[in-house]
Every structure is written in C-alpha cells, then in structure tokens.
Length: 568
Image 1: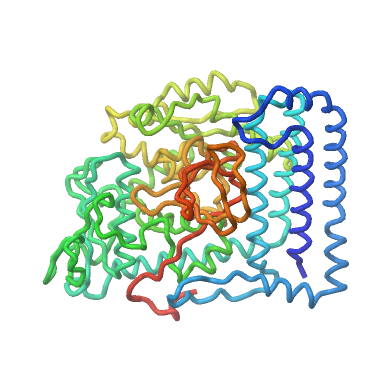
Image 2: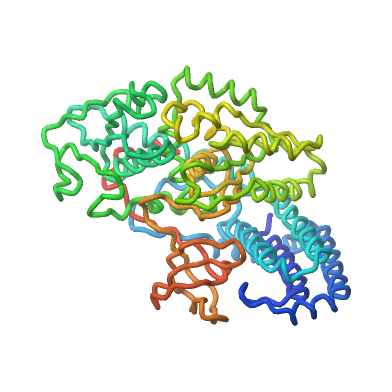
C-alpha cells in the first residue's frame, strides 16, 4: 500500500534542508532591506555554511535511497492506521449543487491529501528559489551557483517522485474522464433536439481587439451559455480575421442550431432573463455581473477536479477553448504540416515574446535573454534526472528579429532553435488581421511544448497555456510568466487565503492573520506578492508562500440538460 505520509515526510525534509541552507547563507529580510553588514558577514562564514549545505544534500540523497524501505516497514507494521489517516484527509467538495458522478476508485489511487501536498511542495520550493534570486546581489557568485545547483537537484527529485509514485495512470485516467464529461455536456447543449424551441444566447465575435482577446470573448459567451443552460449562437459574418466567418476556419459551434431567432428576445442588461433569446454584451459592460464568470468553477465538478489539477480554473477555461477551436479539415492540414516542420517533440520549451502593441502600454519590454534564463533552468533541472538532452526551443513572436537573435546567440550543438519568421511578420500590428493561420499555428505549437515561457499579459500566451491543460494530466506547473499571474480579462480576480501569520517588516508590507482573504494584484517573482487584505482593506506586499489560492465554487448551470447515467 502506498503511503502519502512517507512521501510527504520526505518532501518536508527536502524543503527543510534547503531552507536551512539558504537561511545559513543570507538573512531573510524584506527585498528592500539588504544591508552591506549582512553581506560581509555572509561572505566571512560562507565556507562553513556551504559545508553544512553539502551535509544536508547528502542526507537528502540518503533519505531518497531509504524511502522504499521505510514505506515497506510502515506499511507492514501499520496498514490500518495508514489507511485511516489517508481517508481522514480526503478532500471535501464545497457547493450546494448536485455533484458529478464520482470516479470509480481503483487500487493504487492517491488520496486528495497526498496530491495536494505534492503540488504545494513544488510551489513552495519555487517561491523559495524566487526569494533566493531576489537576494542574489547579497550572495557571492560561487555561493549562488551552489544554491542554484541544489535547487535544481531537489526539483528533479520532485519530478522523479511524480514519475515513480505509481499514480500517473490515475491522473491521466481522471483528467481524460473529466474532459470527456465536459466535452459531451457542451456538445449536447450546443445541439438541442429542437432549435426552434431552445433557449439561446447570441454573441457577436467582433470585439475590437486581437485574436487571443476575441477567442476569450467567445469563451466568456460560451461559459454564460453553459451556466444559463442555453445554446450559444455565434454571429461571425464579417469577422476581422476572416470575412466569411468563424466556420471558414473552425468547425461550427453547433451542427444543428444556428438560427438566432426566437419568440422573445432581450439584452442581458434588461433584467429580463426569462426570454427565449438573450443577447450578450462584451464582458466589460456586463451588468449585472453573474457569479459564474471565470475564474470560478462549477461546484459539481470541483471535488474531482481539485484533487487532480493544481489550477482547476485554468483547466475549466481550457475545456471551452478546446471545444471552440476544433479545426476545419483544411485548417488542420496546415497545422499538422507546421508541427511536422518544427519538430515539436519532447523535450521542447515554447517561448512567446510579445513586442509591438503591448510594449509600453500593457507590458514592459523584456529582452530575449530574460526569457532564456528560464529556458536554461528548465533543461538544467530535467537533465539532473535524464542526463543530457537536445535543448529544443520553439519561439513565437510578432517580431521576426527575436527568432534571428536566438539563432545567432544559441549556436552550440545542444541547442535547436525553431521559429517561423514569416509567421512572426504576419503577427505584427500592421498585418494582424491578415495572419490568422500564422497566429493559430503559434498558439497550438506553443501548447504542444512541454513548458512555456512568456508574459501572461499576452492573451495569446494565456490561450496557449489554457490549451496545454488539456494535453497533460496536470499542466499547472508548466510555465514561467515574466510579468502577470494568470488572469481572465473581465472575469473575477484571484483570491488567496493566508495560511500563516505575517508581521510587517517594513511600511510596504501587509499584516496577515490566518484565514485572511487577499485580493491578489500580482506576484513579483522575488518571494513577495502584492495584494489587498480584505479584512483590513490595506494594500501591500506579503511573502507568497504564506498564502494559498482559493478557488471560488458556484452552483451552476441553472438547469441540467444531461443525465448522470450518460457520464463516466
């Protein structure tokens, strides 16, 4: 019998030793309060402290060797106790709605507590590394490199742990079942038995923005359709990206119901939502605002989804994106040709570099080197447990010079730089509405990669990341964003709950009590996040590891159009 207790204990030991090593090398202070005195003291003691880290690393390696034997001994000695402890920690689903059919338990399935602990361990380890990087100026170069090497080794242990814990079959089976349920629900809703009598929502695609923004607009419309148990009618003739409409590039959103007419009709803001046909505004002008907008998730699938996925709200959005972006055969041929040409095989890191209209308005300029630091980090961690690999990098950008720069810079045989300058040229602002196929290629090729480095201020990047969630058992950790955390434009914001008390160390920090809810403004990727404490209504910084995401669960859809007997 597998014991999450042993694995959790091993994980806690790993983080504890790393934390002790980092504490020994530099004092934990606010990023704005690193003094010269502390730096000099650290340098004087570095030799002795590095020895302590070496000892800690040896102990971790020894723990890893003994892990299997410890599991066997505890499993033989206390099988009933371990089983009871596992069952007592199973996750509980919130919400008042009828729950989805529970998955059929199989021998070897993990507990909710184990899956949650494993993912949280990885998140906290990343935050610890962000903190180290944030103090890099106060750490000697040699010391920093050794800490980095230890971090990479520990991250590789976590990746190997997931591979060898015996639960990957469960993760793949569960995500496939949930995806099948959602796709069947959407397909049934979009093809009602009688279109003339069906309740509908009508959505115009022509929102004045780029491709990623327009797709997210249609996703919002489909979420509203799902939540209100209505069929989505998409009006797309004259679409800026293809004047002939959506169906020229993608499959129709419905095979049987495309007529927007009905016996009664009203706008969303009219307050009359009992009519047959409801017309939607863009999300920015939606009043009243319903509680089911992204990034909330429906309560009926929350229990199973939160157990198997680290960011269930992104998986949820990805299901609608996946349904909507089903290709017409001629579009699929072009996409398949692009995949074959680019050799997107594992391992490949996708890099999306947005220039032109975003820089200076919605986002800051980030040089290519800043992206590639994270690409190198990904491959360095992977090589700790796989050995040397071909470092494939697919670059998507609206600036063809980025691809040229990467090809000139990373010339050694270990690197393979891929990218299409023609597509990059067509993605520029001047050519935006003429380059639809190129943008589609970039989005789907990024989603095919093992990992993506980008800026989440870009809707194209977020779109690729959403699609990526449907291609892996849990892709919640397969990204680095150089700026924003994930968000859904016009939707509800990210909320976190404080897990630990925090006393401000400077005037710019928040005071936190356990249970405080925080409206998150962003992660500074240096160990600190910024947000508003909803208890005190104060804005400030707080250590990222002291709070956890809270996934809002809402009881929707209003009416069922499916039966549990038809679901997995």
